[in-house]
Image (cartoon, rainbow, N blue to C red):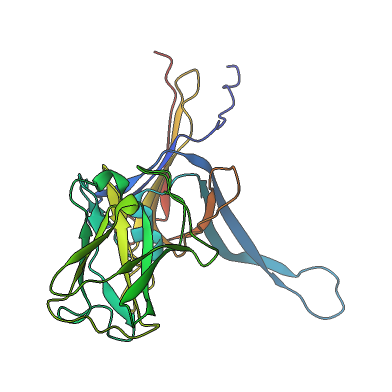
Length: 296
């Protein structure tokens, strides 16, 4: 009988992760750049006296470590590797402006003597620009505020805009009393003054956030005191070969903590994470391997 063709692995197709209790998938990584599963064993040697060689060698520990590299950031990775589920929102057909909140001092946001609210300038959702905005009282004698944006990434949306100076200011406004309004039209924003006489304090600040019109958006806050890093199963699939061969590794229980977020000019971001696999008593092992030869 002739020797069988060598069993070889070629490329990587995908990596999927699942809940170890229900086996319901968390999700799949399709833009996988590599998965290196290192089964590294140790030997324990008995030495002593003047003899230069071991008297005996026994089996030591085996480390099961998966180094996974990928170039996409699906929502479930934040949950399994950073311990926090992502909130995925439906589309904002006219954008979204968060409530304005006092940051330094208390005079900026006040329903009677400050800014009662920040909202969309009627019919101007096309000018809403993504970012975090800061409002600062720059002249309390005239009830004047200066508005800042921390990024110009979206300034070409709708009406083109630019910073007014190096402080990241984008404009000024005089807050009217008696519930009057004033706008930053090029940004689609309208400020409503308090119901009474405005009384601002110099250098007080407040902030709000803007999402422009979008089809989907997510939010997640990492690093909470009660965040939990779940155990998960992990399925790795090699690329299907030309002859139809397929290869699967199922790691029964895994733990991974940390998700690098890398930014390099003119390059797609890639992250490399280290995942540890460990024993699953219900399945009596660390992992299973399946291989299929198919030529049909």
